[in-house]
Length: 119
Image (cartoon, rainbow, N blue to C red; front, side, top):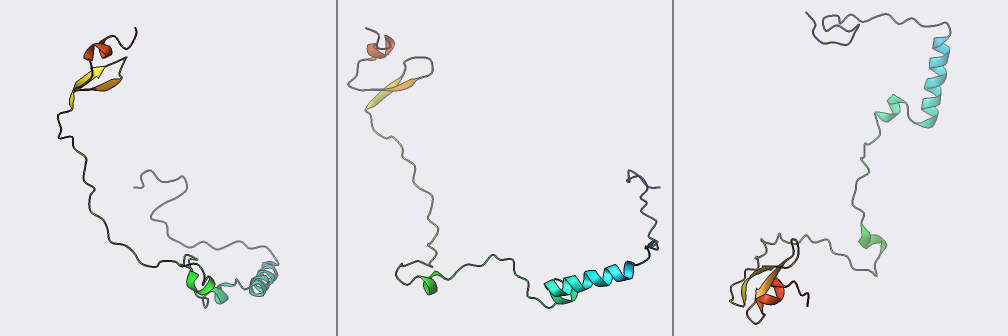
């Protein structure tokens, strides 16, 4: 039983089909192989070539002697210390307008924030 396969496909049919080739296919295939050999991309030629992804690190020391570069990798730094308020200057938080929260300091008058500075 085949479930949810593409129409015409079967998971149990593994028989290799005979290809229907037109007359002159050998000549066309030979011409194509000759073109591949001429351009250096025939599968027999590619088998011997060294594979490279192209992702290599260039050597800048060899090409630029005047500019100093660094090849060292620095150590991973620890977590930065968070700043925490430990003083007693701020006495509270005032709501000026809509959602504008403002810290109220020790020397400021809270009435200014209540009037929203409309004098």
